[in-house]
Length: 106
Length: 106
Length: 106
Length: 106
Image: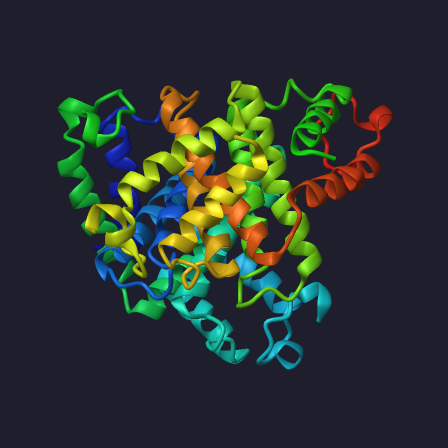
């Protein structure tokens, strides 16, 4: 299944259950933070030891991200590429190579 | 740009800066949680009033999710579809229509 | 200043600014997650190098926690001790010494 | 039990289980973010309906905050009061009364 088909399937899942009423952008943003916490739990005390949990938690975060994009009418590839454009300016290769310094301290 | 091309661009951005050394799966999971907090900040006191911030913060979360998937060798469409399969079993349409109840209390 | 006096000062800070209208329990829970993300940012790529930021971000998380407790009428010492009581049962010393295993897998 | 006695009890709980080895400041910061996500889950789709879960999740966040303060040798009342001092300057009563605007936009 392509990425676009997968996004359509996610949209249908919600519509079929009449869950759009719960899925305000605000509730989706909360859900992303909640699932990001569960994903982080895979690494709470060190490297992840449960690869299956990792797969599922990452899918949960991405699933809610896709729903938030759909809710807001964002084109996912467009917002990703716009942000990479911006990051390329904030982090020029020659200044940022090999350092994790934040752009405002480069 | 397609989703696959966008993912390749994200991968190249990191490699070009020799940042793979910082991007362990654990650090990426932390980064997802950090960016999810920034995304949530758009809704801290109510509906989001800065649509541009929302676009960018959502892109940041997704960007790190894509990097974590790449790091772990996960196929994004596969992990998304596997999780939807599972959710369809946990939340059958007839039992979950119109209710936000968690599956273990359905 | 004692802990109780500090809590009173936090409560007064909000009342003086007429901010109680924004500080619903839900908004405070979001604020705790947002500040927890900022705290985590101190450790995004490894050990924290900015001790002052760490102090401040931890204070921000605790400040909102105290406000949420006040909002809900919780006695902070009581909820902490009740949870420790429960954890002592979930994690008996002899079974959990030196292992980070979650209680449901002990 | 006073707040100081409660903090001592939390410290003893960890020492008794020889868990200090897992409780680096970084792992505690991750734990705070994880528990903040669980706290937020109480409000995922709207107002909290499980007051007992709310009590426990808030206690979990605060418990890890106290441990992080202990780990770093921070005096909790001191860091809270220092931050309130700072916030009083960032948010003067006359400018911030009744508005949720962030200080850099006041």
